[in-house]
Length: 410
Image (cartoon, rainbow, N blue to C red; front, side, top):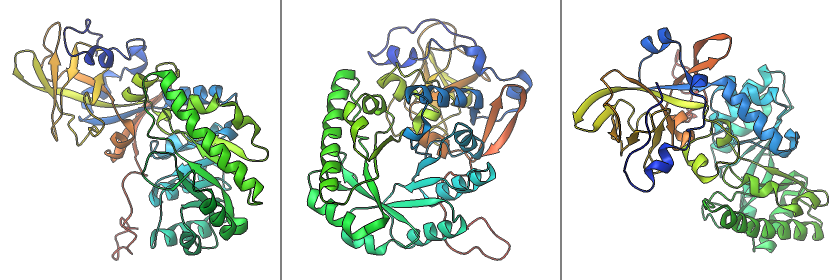
């Protein structure tokens, strides 16, 4: 995995993508030769020291206050990584699935944290609400909450769970319009003491121009603050306002009105930051975050001049976020084409064509679903031999009772 030559002629986007991690110390990602020789490809490799670097970087952005962050654990997926959140002092979390919630609660309890605050930030209906209710009963000191977007939804939520109103800031995926103040107040009053606050996820804002991104994000935040003020005036105050995934978290931290919400705590909720990826680096290279989860692959074919193929296709590397789906760490002359299920073609823009068997490390364009594709990962940590760990929070539970002797469906 030696550094290659400069990128040659290609599309206007390719040099930017291929060179976006040129500043990294490649030695920090080198695998022991005996490990690389035996590791099957494609494999997910997670660098725990880089995870810790990213957590420290995020806390620096937050002024050292972990209470300002409610990370979405949809990216992390691995108990050994979730435990690092606890060690960093984080106690507020977001989840997307019941399995993530279960694995998170179990991991935190094993780490000595039995009273976390967890929001399942996904619209839930029966039977999923019943699963979360059982988790609340199993972890009585944990504070579990779910999202609601109408008055009927309040009645469906079990008594053990608290509620956040989900508002739609323009992503048009879930939630009420921010301008529908009356409906939000009605839901908050119906929830009574179980009403916790407002969830406003601005994940549709991906402007690469930092000024345009900030203007768009701050316009959303202005509406969210107006909504929080309206709730307070209606004697239905929100204890918390949650905003901001990874692209806009710096913009949220720079939004001064969040510091003066008069009794409402503001928290950001980025999750991708724990591993970082190509898309986030392209959108904002100033965050100081580094890749921490990569896909190990091998060149398996040289089908045409200037073209090689590695064995990490779309079943090992998420491809839904567009091309290039990854960059080859330390090899900017290799430019990823569109993958098929088991194959990823690479254009050789300069230098010698890699031989069959050449090992590569791929930084995913979108790391969150990439991690979800792997059942196990190789965990690399300074001072310890690399070890295989389970990606325990991947995929989804069935919810059905397992057959006798088969606990996998639980």
